[in-house]
Image (cartoon, rainbow, N blue to C red; front, top):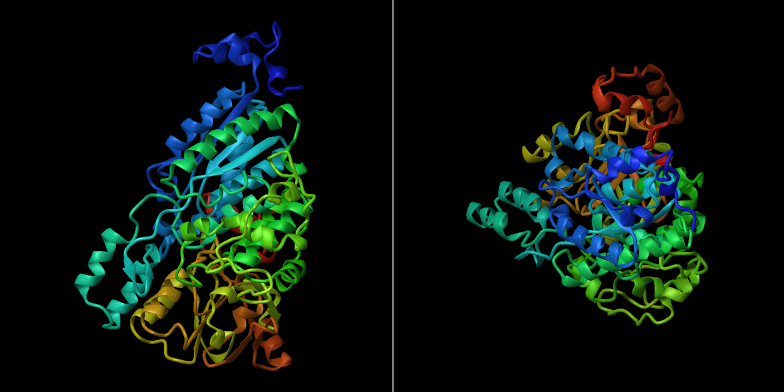
Length: 554
């Protein structure tokens, strides 16, 4: 077994390094074993990460049991929920690159032999997977798990988005202040990633389908003892991966990525998956064109439905069979020879998986829809691509024609909704919120939730070059590319223009002539960058299009 760490621990050349380790209490026996990093994103700011200190203890136990030496280090993590609706959201997507680079830095600087990626939530899991792909050493993901659902509200178990929806209801007079105030203490009864199928849980499921975490572990609730046992098992498993010289790029490759897209389509995962999988693919030189992404979604049935598309939440999905049950149903569509962190391929992992609960996970021959829960649109408003989530859209809203109401920032759109300025038949266009224009490609979750609360979710649409939360419903189209700040057609839309959205046909169209569109774009002038300093200044300068994953291009 060739260990990277031993290249900097051999006497006498590297006695200095051994002395530095020994100053912290490590022994000769510790330094003889594989050094296994635990990249822990625990903090007391993010509910999805509050349990990770305890989870890390069990990962440590597993590493020690298998004959490795655990070396833990911290990784930043920011909360989408806390950042939503203000300037902080500009930092959320860009944090993904910081997370990947910080893990790369720690692992390479200290020549670690393997790494356990301990995280949860929206940009942390994809950032960690990007790091694993970039490093190409033994790696395994352990996520923190979903929170339990809260009190019953609006016909389902509440979650943090219930508060945003409730605000719209309060403003519209549909609930009273006392009812709204009670939500604060009742919507999130436990720590964990939010209980709906947002980006956090979508990416955990995607990681499992890709083969980067142990089967059946993506959706174990944060507070369950099984979460700790799975962490300990992952600790043992990472040592075996080092010993067998199974590295991350043997798992994160075209087969693993396509399996992940299929799974996301089958469960109706977050639209943000269409950002993160191309970004992960770029780390292993595997392009994920939006045309291929849509092809995989079109040919994958939507068989699992949960909040925001239905009342059940992610812990309910776990009890119904979770990711393994879905993969078993669509196994003939998967690359079942793809390698996973178990050391076995997908086919072997699924060989004894029982069927799922059909209330949540339908059999392949009776899907919720014959096409997957994500869709890529194109047209004169989005020549490169745009993303939507038909799994969360009411059938009556899959086609929508309306008149544009244009806003050049999220805050202006939100204020217009609160003040009752958005009417049935409007298409709310929120632009200059893309990767460069934002900068940071903020989520437009607040606008959608406020529209829902005002009873307009089935009477309006939202189109943006920004992103959406995985909890959104109504009619929404995001990731419009090219973005407004790059002179994309969305910059040329004017109030009153007719916009037609046809999700079954994968089209989004601005109803003006080609000559008129060209004339408007010729007259367009690039606005000055909003932020030119600090990390966001760098991100605005280097970020690629959403259609390429919004990665940094040097």
